[in-house]
Picture 1 (cartoon, rainbow, N blue to C red):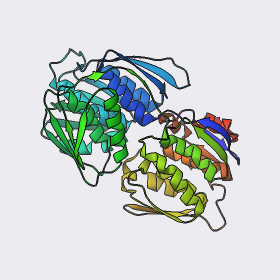
Picture 2 (cartoon, helix red, strand yellow):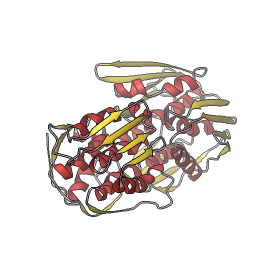
Picture 3 (cartoon, helix red, strand yellow):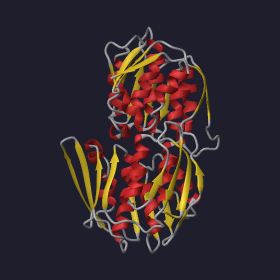
Picture 4 (cartoon, rainbow, N blue to C red):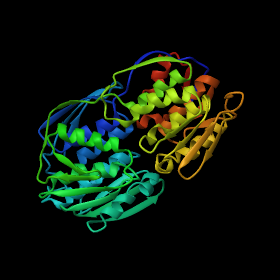
Length: 422
């Protein structure tokens, strides 16, 4: 899908989309619970649909209405008695893959319920890029517990996992993705004995681990932080069902708030002022970028990088550190933004763990050619913001379905001139 955006000033009030980070975790907790849970305010993005599919592979049943508005999802959980093996369709969701992989190993370790699709293995179907970049930390941390086989061919990716997850001490690198810690924190309480998880420093994106601990607590699962980077996980715990509501998404709300830094007047409602989501720091960073040249560390908020790069290009420029992990996102985000911002006249320099963005002396101009989303939802949304200043066309705009399928409809409701075509 292509989107043509005309010069526009955004104005109005909009409700933040539901948090994808919380929704993933709440749905998984519900799938592991005894009884039926109700999760309110869920956005059925491609990533969340992947998590719902995988929850059903574990043996949970889910129900929801097929409408574009935020949904209420009901999950009849497994009570921790998981189906063994089977195929997990993760699409392009790194969270889904990394959260479910240890749980699938836990299922292989149990006295299993029969699953006709299983032969002692779990198969994770995903995009080739995700299969290639997705599980390196697990391959290290679980090398004595599991074996992994990756296949990428004909535009498809697959990771076959076999082995068992046993109680014990696990050590993982903390500078790749907090999602690996989250996966283990969901799986280890299901094991019959206690475990310990050590996250080697530097532990980045720690706010996401705080979100995980918050969700586990909601389901009655206790994990204890015993040192700066160490968690104690009691064994033989049970997830308790309940009624939960997903709070607003700080990561995607950042794209709406950024419109104010670009001359708009947008009020975003539906956010939790006490949220544990680390990306709420966007408010502070947008103020700094609007005031002058800025230096900012993104190691704890890498998902904000595309929108911050875009605002820096439109304002006074910035130097961003802590950008190394951008290479392993849905695209190589630093290089993708360098390529696309150049079309507006901005200069971007990409180093190993640093990105410098300098606006053109006379301000951004209309892009010299069609912009590309690089099949990355956050790139598509970031470029859309700049097009409200200069006008422009974005190809591959359907990438927003991954996390915020209503994004362009919301822009339109704020007075942004746009049209879509295939």
